[in-house]
Length: 203
Ligand code: MG
Image: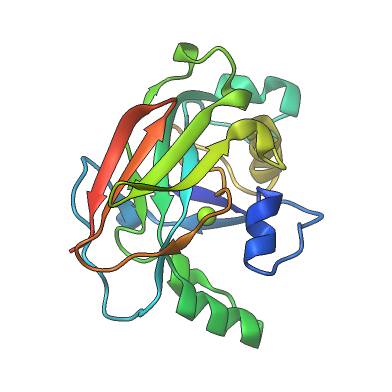
């Protein structure tokens, strides 16, 4: 399986990093080795001094698909969770300044934290899901999937033009504003509709 992640999908977050809201969907990928699940701790890597959390709603693919039309995209995912797209912001900034790819800032081991997944049927509307994240008990990010620039169906249609989606693939849908740094000893908790779905200690 693979992780597909969308960049700059909330305009307020694009602005906070000094980025323009993109005309075209921005996506990147993380390998299977990036997955961190079951509320396991995250060990702060040596290669960064500015590790950021990005809290994102995640959809899981349930059907193989290529060139999926937007109107049929909802048949291709069946589960929803919440995840952290850990980002080595210093490495990303350095690469962006040089116009180089920022793969190493995003795809490192354990950089895709994922919660338990629940059936999408549990939600009346996947395009209006509230979610939030706390750091050491303080709320840092609040989002709603209705504010995504590209909806999940639009993401599936766009990405599947380039990449075949396979069963079990995870799509991270981008982060709302409020990203920030973590340090060793911190504890992240993430919620969907006030239900705690995930916790992750930084060690
Ligand atoms: Mg992200």
